[in-house]
Image 1 (cartoon, helix red, strand yellow):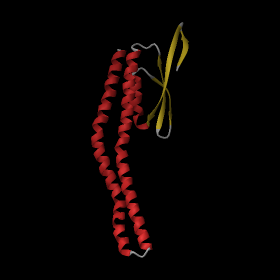
Image 2 (image 1 turned 90 degrees about the vertical axis):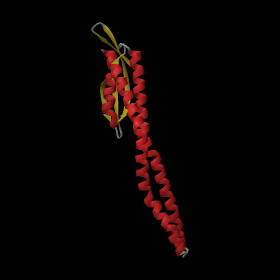
Image 3 (image 1 turned 60 degrees about the vertical axis):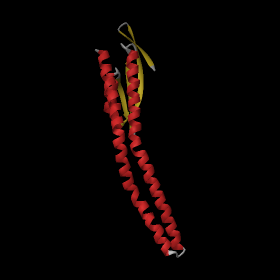
Image 4 (image 1 turned 180 degrees about the vertical axis):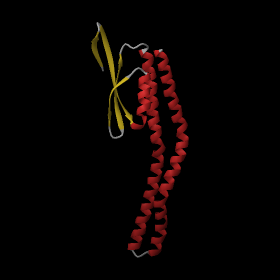
Length: 173
């Protein structure tokens, strides 16, 4: 989107951008876009994200190079968000699976109790209770393991962002 303004006998073309950023990344994103020549003209907070409305001069020097650096930064931000979600996804699935299996055993124990099969009820209730208690520990262990695997990848994406911002600031010098 662009807009034309006349400014002291000069036509100024601006381009606009609206991005939605998770609350955790607002400051880093603001700094990154500022390094790429954007100015924040408005921001609005949502439930989990902040919308930033940005503007910059369309005829900015090295615009093509800045657009390439901007794509790198945006890709890195997307990768960071995906990796942050990946920390919990598998752990949550395993914990839910263990809880469901525990519930199945407890259901069997309940029906065994109702059928007056007390020994079978006890046999089914033991793995049922284990299946209800295990998910917490399973979740914590898997989140910790996945965090250790994912953090180096997240850091490398932060490095990509910092390098792109440094290159962008050098283009403005």
